[in-house]
Length: 179
Image (cartoon, rainbow, N blue to C red; front, top):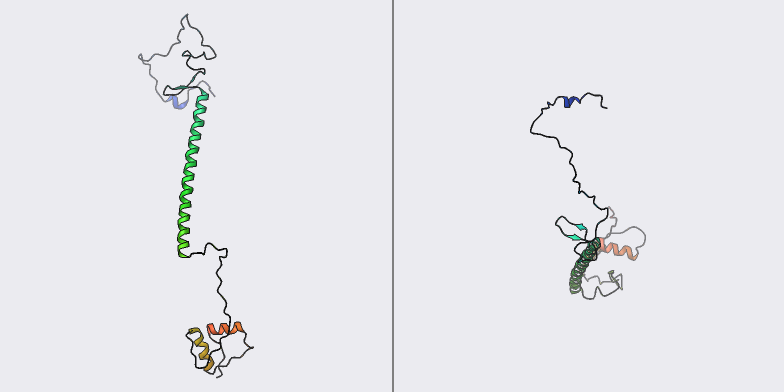
């Protein structure tokens, strides 16, 4: 890679020699210099049975076991706060459900207390009601069928069944008029 020539970009930068800049020189060690031990010495204060050799940027010293214990205490505190918050939220949701249930019971008492939840209409005892010729019923649906019968319309088809008669009463007869 290095073939004795400077890099082309570096060759373009002029170099000057300044008398104000001096290169660093090697330091000489004193004769009383002693090397540091490879292990940590015991605590000089002697107030604790464990050496506090983890020092934070603020200057607080602690032993790793103390740090682990404080982390576990913090975790337990946060778990307690989370459990309390979950309990409060559940109580709030249960209160909302109870208020909604009370409102539903106020609107339809007894409805929620039964097992049957599907409403079914009651069936009539007599599906074909016999009326007198002069008797007019107040049902609008029946008026069309009565008008069709008295108007001289004839129906062509198979004999009627009760379901067909109910449909005719509901929608009117679809008879064929002779022209």
